[in-house]
Length: 323
Ligand code: PBG
Image 1 (cartoon, rainbow, N blue to C red):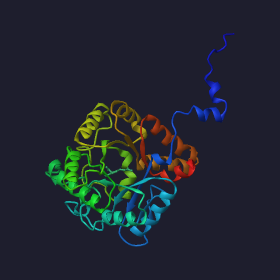
Image 2 (image 1 turned 135 degrees about the vertical axis):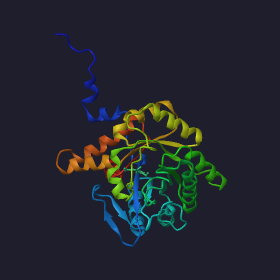
Image 3 (image 1 turned 30 degrees about the horizontal axis):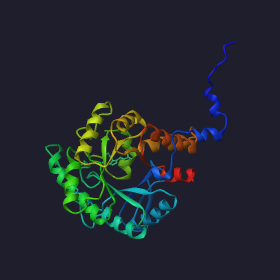
Image 4 (image 1 turned 180 degrees about the horizontal axis):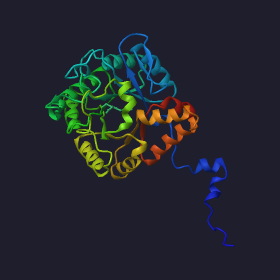
């Protein structure tokens, strides 16, 4: 009988050896938890399609942030549900806007938690699109000014990192210039560089009340069929001044994460989005998937593909499992 000469199983037979040769190690330091702030007091409303995630008023968010920090998670990304919406999304750049107020409260209560702000208008516009509308579509260049105003207003309220997610052309440059002109030259930009027009955002639109009232987002977010275009988008954002580049969603786009990681030398982030979370949780609840293993495997694989940072609704559970 021809016996195998090299036996890969030798290094798999003990957990000690397996753990010594493990190539990817997930840490709570890789994780960013998304937080949805809403008006009111003592509000903590579970998001139906995202069990374990809530719309919270600022007082509750502050409590949540203390918990997040104590789990060893270094950062959150904030989304706002404003008290009212209008055509221009003015709630996004109001000095007393919901995210601005939350930033000030969290900063003073939990100073060493890193605060990232998603910069986009879709939660704030009455039509639910990510910018100003002209002739039935989002007007790119008019929207840039509103995004820059929003970014500056978040930086002034205490945001540590600015994360534009709107997919307008040229927004990283406009935001960078505006921040620099106002002495926020040290505030990094984490750009949603390759953001796809994905059906996996379904539950988020309930969480952030941001579903478009007409049409869809395909005139600004990317076609899921395209990989080379992602490289072009990332290259542009880097030229324009992005410090970290993100791919979104994560698990169905591991090839994109991998290519971005190998072709550029900036840190890469990935967003395990609401629909990825909802699908995994639904299967767990039916007893079809093992909860803890699924959480750790999905996140480890996203990291293995090349993500240095992962935004995930599983952050708290993953941090507990990793401690
Ligand atoms: C805002 C934004 C969205 C998400 C993050 N920022 C929604 C969208 O683009 O439609 C999705 C996050 C998720 O699904 O978890 N533009």
